[in-house]
Length: 290
Image (cartoon, rainbow, N blue to C red; front, side, top):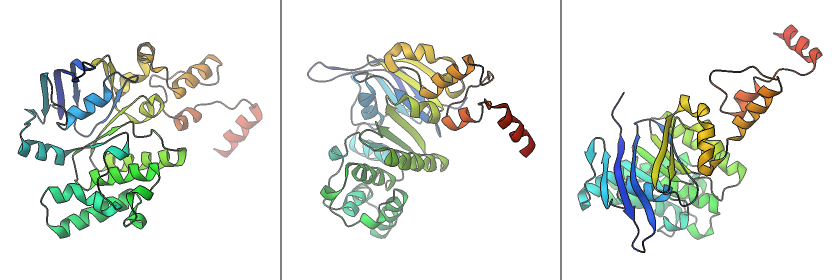
């Protein structure tokens, strides 16, 4: 097995007011993976996100990137944040400039890149999230979903190896969610390591190849993709419920409409292909066509 790209070793963090964040949290994230950090509200997901590129520093334990402990000095953090980008749940906390283009330019400009290279990266990032036509629009005039896409474009312009998204679908309508899912799929196909912190079990079930469940600030369970369909009862014990596709699969199995599989379906599309026609006539027609 390859070595983890990011690793937390017994990381503990409490906020100044005494609120818990992480408690002896240990987990590994592998290069090129689609990792879901799951948990109910208050489980420590956002706190974990903020440790991944050095915004927060452990009070105990260690965070490693590419096998090396994080360097919290200014040059070390600058390098780390060019490699690990975070898109926050609330875009208002991330937007800094007056116009879309200026905001997306902020990160690569701070890297000290040549102006022409910055411009090239910005245009590529805006095109990737479908905001080229709004490049000169004031940020305050954008919708919530458009602001989220500006934040993602700002991260893309840094060309990081890892992108972390905290509750990426919060506040987005269904078409915007599908659009963002398409962007994430393309980024992963290009080799980007993707990490999503969420309580959206349905999306995580279809999308992720690794799950980590947080509970009271610690990693209470970690599974690879092929294991996930077989641990859902355990996952439900953490207050996350059961993915809709998995629930329907069980119901259809009980009704005799589908046959059991060693690897159950993890998307609606996969599930629908398994359903036997209820009407024998339809079954004969399907046989004749094939």
